[in-house]
Length: 315
Image: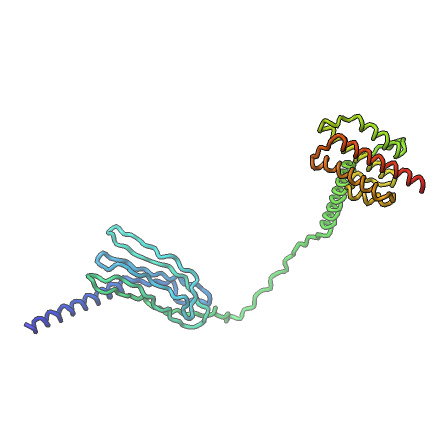
């Protein structure tokens, strides 16, 4: 009984081994390694195609080939993605194209690459290797004919002289700069406030304009703002005419610095500063002072003009 059991076990093991060998042989027959050339010049490329048909009775593919990062004497130029092809009988084939080259002269073997198939009937997975192949890498053959080559005739090359083009570009650039400067100064001159030449002296003109301000309605917001704008302009016009300067674009701080030339007492300079800052507050901060504050600002500027006039006449 024991010998009979051993006989059947041995027979089962033998059949299993035969089946595995047959499967591996079948896979080896169907796993194709196709190259378009095996003799190349240095740097020439080889198209390598790995194809694995999967028949209905074969195990399924569990692990496609893994391409090493580096292969001695070979360079991987391009690796296409694996393609799956379906056939009418429900079978499949997987193929992948790899472009390789070599820069080492000599005869080199491209190694086999493993592909893993699942086992059939509970058997272990089968690893099938692609075919390795030899690639002959050589230099381009030397010319042994020793024939002399004709010297190519001289080719006439037309040379374009850019000198006058540079001159024309420079002239156009200069004209453009002149035009821009002209437009800039013309606009600046246009934007500058027009200063009409008055027949009155600076002092008489200032007094007359200050007198006109008394006619403004200091209860109306619009007239209050215009009142203080003109009040500052009257003082700037007077001081500018006395000093021979254009002070319309100057700030309150600049005006107070210009007053150092007059050498007024500090109290008068302080009152002038208060009046001018009040006009600034109305103009820029939309401050609306009381009517008596506006009148005080006018009176302080009037006193400053009067003192300045006396100082300049005595010196």
